[in-house]
Length: 154
Length: 416
Image 1: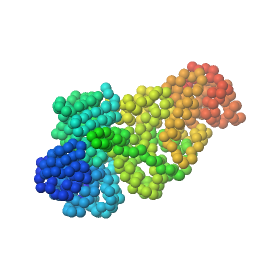
Image 2: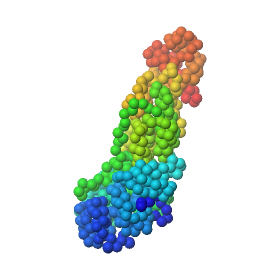
Image 3: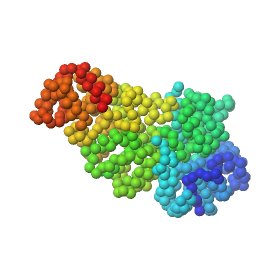
Image 4: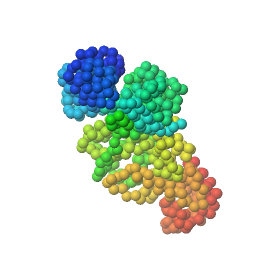
């Protein structure tokens, strides 16, 4: 199940880049699902657990893949972590849905991520069950733009 | 100081070339598009790394990730890139510091929490790449305005003079039957106001917000509009009310948006300061008297509003321009910026005061008043239309016999 919150807490891993670089394991990069995500999001190929082939940058270390892919890999391999998914672009959204079908994962969003389809999730801020994209949008609008002076700009 | 920094930096594998405008910009978009690589390149350039070519016209820097504050001297006149991983973006302490810095900030982040900063919708970008070449393109596409067949409600983000102006324009235009004009009292409350109005039964909206400071909030507004397929929205993304006044060319100066630079927090601030120079009495909180209308039926705007393809932009420009053009034709009166405009408006549009002005004029220029009454109406005691009064002056039917007295009277009027 995918659990979504729109509020960062002390346990939220917002430095996704740093977290991945310091805890990733070689075996993670052998996972075909991981290779699929790297190919889809970064358009790059995992060659060895330590090297990725980028069409633009050439051979790069694993630590140089994008922050979005790192977040996805952490969600897949370390579902115990609450990941700040605003480090992910919209091109990661479908993968978040897929990983959420595999096991319970927890993400925090500080923006409105565009999910490509209806999906199943729970908004932990107000215990709302999300079954459609519109349900998600309603939650996101209510929690990110509360309409009070919390984020007053003027 | 450079006003629109041109950034051009490259190595053997990648090249970045783009310009930014305004003090604050955001780069967001899909993952894997090279945003972090850009930051790495800038850092490498600043330590004279062989192979990195920096042709930018402004010094660049990347704020260190572990920075908890920003030294204004260190960032002066630079383009400072702040990554989403930077500690300062997560400790909530950055806003005041940013305002004190005289430089450009580029945030590489997707969060809507930057809504406290006045970031223009045009300054939100996504990275676009074609092979090794990377550039920025605006993330927000211009709104495709829906055809309006009717208007239920007008929602204005502004709660100050801009809102007052729109509200009175609405009343004047003739489309005021059943049309509600309301304020959201700020960009961050637009979505809440839309929901409130929809729940109250309204369906066809004109939405006016300040694009000069909307930033990432626009994502929420777009999502909200798309979430209401049974409603129609005609969006006016104006760049602050002050900008409208300046851009309508009433002061006869070429207003250049590209001259904002980083000395101002936002276009809104820039426009407000410039307007204040031209109209010292301008007060953002209250509509200046020269732009104020009331719903007097004797002097209402003659423009016919059909409410179909209701183009607010053009209407506001034309209204301000029309007013000022009319005022400039007053003969034998020294048309200085504020006093002349104030006077003319007062004469033209203030229903209650025009009785006073006729009386006042009667004291100083009896013949004038009598002639006006005679021309405009056979009934000398009736209230004379201020428009007719001025039109007769323009047509030469009535002479201003004592310009100095007239100007003194202007001074008296402008104090009211």
